[in-house]
Image (cartoon, rainbow, N blue to C red; front, side, top):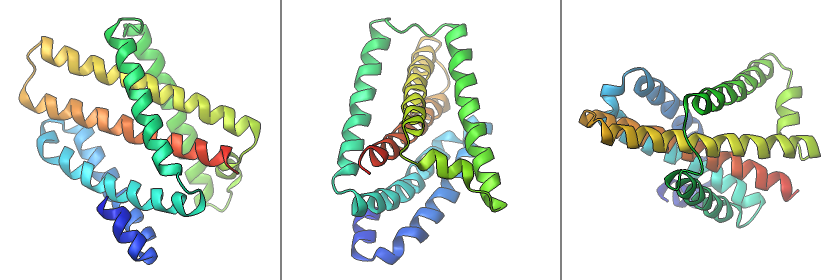
Length: 200
């Protein structure tokens, strides 16, 4: 909310806030992922930095497509509620095969994004331009990515549940919360992109 309001009052802050928040969140996220015991400290910091990034970019999208941020938030909450219901009712069962499948799909998406980023650095934006286009194939890819992000929520719910059952250390509560936050941020971002494609 602070980022959104500040950037609204001074549009020149949009990119500095987005860049600073994005880089900071990435660094803190890597630290948290490799040092789970640091989660009680790094998870709140990550939340603040990610808030800067998302707030700035949400405003950027909002200026082009009025109301899109609220729609993305509502859809994110809706997907979260549906996935939680499916998980608690055991319609979705997190087996080892399920975990491996979701992790593999997530890894493949990450590799595509990484390849796109590297190509862009060397002056070839063909992949990123395609991923951001509103072509039927690009929209279909976005829908698939949103689906994979949603399935990651089931893994997060499972991590929380297993932590409770095994009476995991306190820092694991923060680590599980961090994981859930990362997934929700990713889901929101992908929904924001998908909605922007549909409104062009």
